[in-house]
Length: 154
Picture 1 (spheres, helix red, strand yellow):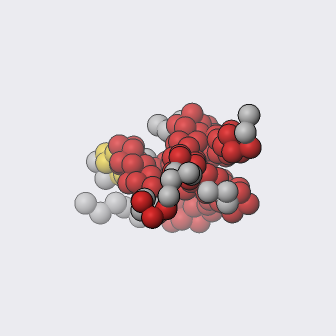
Picture 2 (cartoon, rainbow, N blue to C red):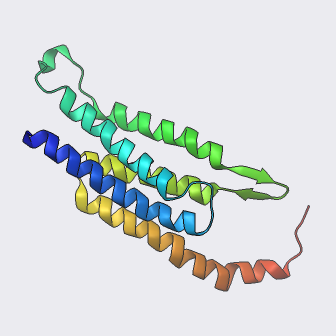
């Protein structure tokens, strides 16, 4: 097995694990997109980056316009479409927005892994978990308590 193929295998595995970590929290809270969805989106983003990076090797650069930002933009749009399907408005509440944002971050983490930006991608994964857990505790303690006493305006 050549070195490039082995590196892609490692990147895909790492992206799958990091995406799964983000998705575990969503699954635990019984949200619509959990561990499997986040893992697949993260791994898929890494694969798209790897495909872009490695399939063009061997082509003369003067014959091909090589712009990695086009692949990144396509990932953002594609995941935005998936995330839009997660967002539901029921009466006076919007549901699924945090899960959609987590899915969006999973795609960014996967793209980072595919580009070889390992430590920032791992750090982003743990920041996301901190936001999911730490911010929820903060909201429950300080923000939701105050809004519970206020009557909803319609």
